[in-house]
Image (cartoon, rainbow, N blue to C red; front, side):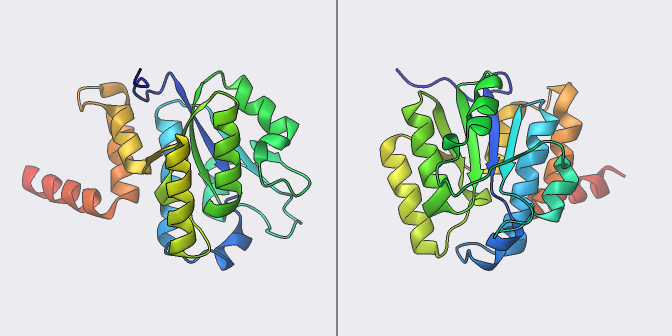
Length: 207
């Protein structure tokens, strides 16, 4: 049986270790684009009222605090601080409990790094019976090769790759969904260069 479509009612967004220290490690993606996509994903959760589970190590740990742009969007109070050196975030009881309490069986993950915590946490999510999706453009690896190989391995295991904007578009569904359409258009304007330019052109023609 094919899995049902992702909706705001059946999914949660899980963001792991988007820390400033990893900005000096990954080379698979442009740093500014990665931060843009990560914040776009977090805002998507907000626009559509989707549970967001956000976790990182301690600010004083080896990888430091969250990206300042992500912290500004989500606030400090929501961050589940994970102690220890677990590659699989589910090994931290507070994280596992937060995911479970979200009450959703479809998890959309973005994590650093792809070949480390992404791979370990995504596979563990499958073992726990979740449907796991990975936002591959809000996820990055040490090199493009290590990122792509890790994504391929996850796909073979049953993880579904998505991108943050395709996810937002699927949640929106139609421009007639008026409760969220302004938020959706704001996402495109702020975080998608191509769609933002398209919307600016439409605004000029409408004058």
